[in-house]
Length: 354
Ligand code: UD1
Image (tube, rainbow, N blue to C red; front, side, top):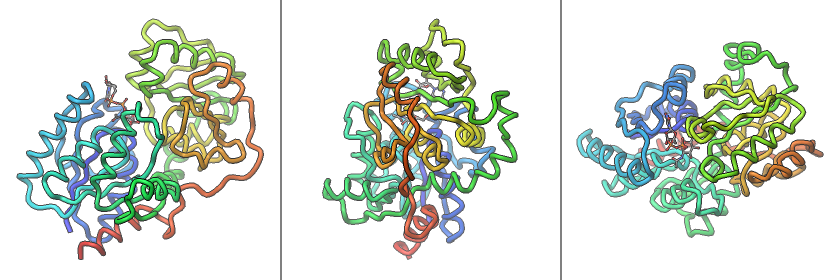
């Protein structure tokens, strides 16, 4: 079996680090295409260097731009590649980025079946570009690899039961695979002088927070009222949006960090504050409470017993949520029936195409 995997943004390199070796282990030949959506070394190359993701076979070098430009450029270049690179049994895409959508659209139109890893995740907020990317990608997919039971329910509600399998979350696989390597290569002292459990780690990059006037300012004001240092690795979009804005004295601005350093920062934190989907889950798996700087989450399972709270960009809500502590145990999130989600995906693809 020969498959073409399309990746392009940070979280997809992490997911590929779990899935690519699993595909190889069952004898599937994988061709890896990097769309070039993320191109800065700290947003891209570091993930390949640290996580053992095979070097991409092709880089489409699309770079930044409007959604239409970015999606269109990926489609044009990927179509040219797919129609010239021999036949594929599947195109595999991850998550919800513009690279995911473009990959699924081109594959479907070239009559190559689509495998979607992280199918069925929904925020029910169509103002998020990611939500549109998810809905369309799921509708076009032959294999819908869902990370949670809730995702399976969402797909069923849209009539997508054929091809849907709950496999668990490949990000949980990655967390398990790399926790030890993170400890060895990125001990906390290598990243910050702040002691464990005496800081919060924050990330902010959603357009709803960076591009809406006032939201970023009220998030930063809330951070300024927290009783600990708040470490804030800056996504380029956020850096640009901050412009001349001054961060409060306890907010430590940092360059973007790689996955291993982020695992260390997350596992040692007192609190995570984020608008990222992935970091919410990592916080949960590492038993660190989370404040989600959005109006909703794709992972409402994390609300139980106060492990996660959605505050949007509301200063008072953020400060109040940060003061709360969880008051009970966690539920299982992203645990697949066969243990490793990546291995199950590889096995299912292999069986189906034999
Ligand atoms: C994308 C995904 C988002 C994911 C995130 C992970 C979409 C719609 N969004 O958002 O779901 O959570 O990746 O980080 O696909 N930029 C750089 N260097 C880079 C890449 C981007 O400077 O290497 C800047 C560009 O100026 C660009 C901005 O960051 O305008 C946003 O980049 P883009 O890839 O469009 O979306 P993300 O916000 O990163």
